[in-house]
Image 1 (cartoon, rainbow, N blue to C red):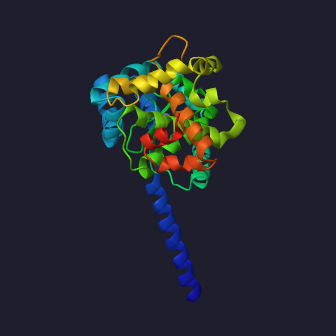
Image 2: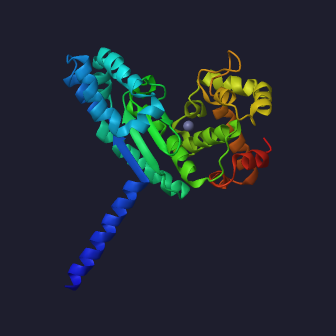
Length: 300
Ligand SMILES: [Zn+2]
């Protein structure tokens, strides 16, 4: 009797723990269903096929798809055109990535990030095939995605190498209550994610790799630091989307030698200056302080 009740207590604690884990981080893998239906309906009439794609894939996750590719016609157009046309490529890509191993590695990084930071990453991860606007990215409000179509996702290692970066975003979005809608919010957010990616992997990847730059591009950032600094001073407090994009987007470059997404580099430099000033564990402050406070205190 006594043993049985102990067993029941243990069981209910385990169930509660499992439920809590589910709530903290959910993985929604739509990629396998997409491929299965694309293969199955390769030659089906497009109107019939579209209804199947819509009912099985789009509608149950409408908010997510709208946030990434846009309204239903955009999603169906991608599935019917690129999805069917490049199906052999997508099948091959899928074989190059071992989904089970990917999830295993994901959970490992998640647990180690929790140990490193003291915080639980919260949110949802979607694994999909789509137009490849990003390799791994955030849709805001804790939703992340891995678009397996993206050229950078050709190997498992490439995908795994950015897990600490993305998990940092997820911790930030649930822990840091200071919402900053200026460019500085993006700069600190991305720079900190790069910093944490580097802290997590140590010497495994170079800073340029953590930034998604070439080594030459990183050298140019250092060589042209006055131009980069001026760009920050002139635009860092702007809340205009077009200006914020100049710090975030890979396609925008201040000049031909500098890399896109220059905000990642600037943010990384601000966090590094802050840690240099306040001690080696002071990166933990970034989870709690506002981007503006971090920027000002860093005296970068
Ligand atoms: Zn990021």
